Image 1: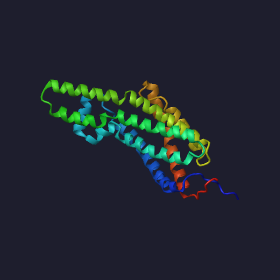
Image 2: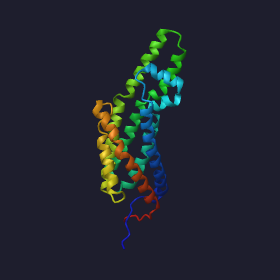
Image 3: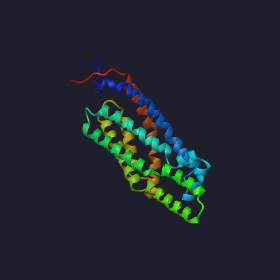
Image 4: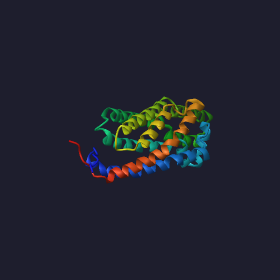
Length: 236
């Protein structure tokens, strides 16, 4: 029986096992953040955000997507692993995917400037002694929230969808991942091409994208664990 050729660096094996556990962790973060959204929806006004931070700092951070910020940062590690796995056969696709992923996450972090700024503004607002000072802080807070769902976020979200599409196509052309994994990723990436800030249509698509991402992460974890255990034979 012919041995299946696996093309990736042997040094990647322990990293693949780590990515298996990381994928499970990412799987847990998504429903957690979704639950927070329904249990404690983001406040509609700056003042209500200020009040929330004074009552519950952790919930304030969660309502400003702390967990999704962590999720995005950790996803880069997954894409790095996919790059090293797939670069021998789809170098252009995965190189573009990795670049887009880094740009996407960078823009996302920039868009989340409000994450810690709103806490500082809330603390200043709570001790403000004049109406002028409170009005100024409220205006700054409104600017933070405008940036929060502004251009950087929308471009980041779109590039995130493009990233998943590129890696999914590369996965479909590879024998290292199942076709189901690749197709689920492709569907998820397409649904992410429209940011949730684009009205009701974008909001619906953003929640629909959660449907494929859950089984996708489980399949990714299983694939990473499997690849981390298999013997590697380098093609000559």
